[in-house]
Image 1 (tube, rainbow, N blue to C red):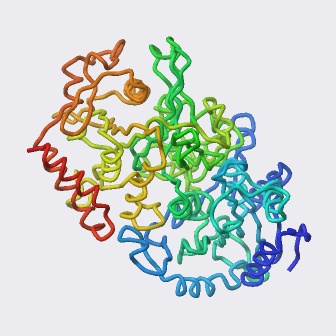
Image 2 (cartoon, rainbow, N blue to C red; image 1 turned 90 degrees about the vertical axis):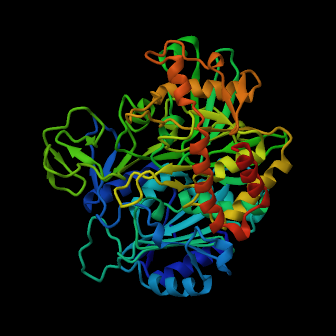
Image 3 (cartoon, rainbow, N blue to C red; image 1 turned 180 degrees about the vertical axis):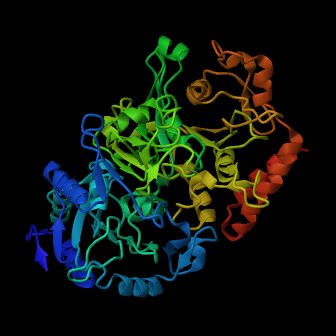
Length: 615
């Protein structure tokens, strides 16, 4: 086994672990990643040479690449994602539990010689601004160069992170970060060893997949997949599942939330976080551009993060938030210059596209990118594609990885180690009925209840699922690293550590009329809802109390220059129907039954209070 950068690290615990992983997985060489441009250039060219990457037209998409995965490796695999704790109840009924001893034994066998014939890359990375009190340093070892170049976009990565870790261990730099682990161990292999002389494939992977989180040890072991959150272990695995456990123990919160700045014409700025299940417009909201009537008056938005927020009680008494990531890993289909110009500008260069289509002039295309379909493409599987051929050109979960610093509306404070102060917390789902466009919770406890019960109507064609609400508490159902009932209790407890509480809101852009047409125009017009939310956070907008919370008065909600939207339309989109809410109350109880052993009594009381108000 050859070793590049043979000095490794002066941090003996890390060096010992890397040596142990190399002995276990037997790669042909070990390379310590430095995060440099030279390394990027070398690895991207290597990926092009082996057929994993296609270099895109440098005039249309400079320094950008297209990757095509195996059809069996295209998304997160929740059924193969495990939370490994001593007792099943610590993981809870919404997670897939595994005994940590048994899982470690099984994976030790899987990882034995798993990197034979391949390079093992050692990736030091930091989630969050490196000087933030919440920053978490991880080290991922992987046999995938695709992972290395994506991690360079998605996290602080390379020699400067390694040096920071070494300095903290030596004592020359004080350690501010919590959690007993100096670094979080992240072991990853695509599970496709190469015998001597065996030809490689463009996308190596294994049908047998395990994404396992060892909560107490603060370790992640992922085997068999090279795609997305299965392989970029700093993302969902560390920043949510492991971090949520650390956060619970150290009085902060790791949440599946965007962070958005709202800038008023008078110069005031309000930051909000928002949690949405998939297909509910999360990225579009994070990158929202105010409509022309707002922009003309000086309204602006800025983005701190589009996917994950780490929040903690700051010394100023407010909840502060950082984005632990440095890049966007966005869904491509449906993204275009009209729906999300900000996302499109963010990926004009230095980007990686996975499972989208290739145009004849060396650019990328996906469904929804343009109104007219190209006459010919190479689809995401590498086959010729023409309109009407019966296949989609891009996979439904195709992605773009782009540096956040390229975003034209990136907030000036997005890398502030102190984070940004949060004045509002927004929850929302895709609901055709019942839920009004916006309402405000009565207080913190009620706000937690609203987040705990939020969900979206299922649209799959499976019998009996259409219209059924899938509950996704705080949009964390696949990402909470411990019992969801205990997670609710942690949310409720956090109120004790704050003196200036954020306001809670619920939004629903997707309500429909009797004919199935959307009642609200959505997209940039959502700025009108955000204006009311911002003013409510600052005590400057009126509303009236209903059984479910505070909702805006027509007179206090800005519909100026909104064509074809009348007072009657406003009343429809804000309508409260007691009968629909009684059915909603019953539906909400199903999740509570599953979590009953760990469910905080306060949420039961909140449900009883809602029931009493609906009488």
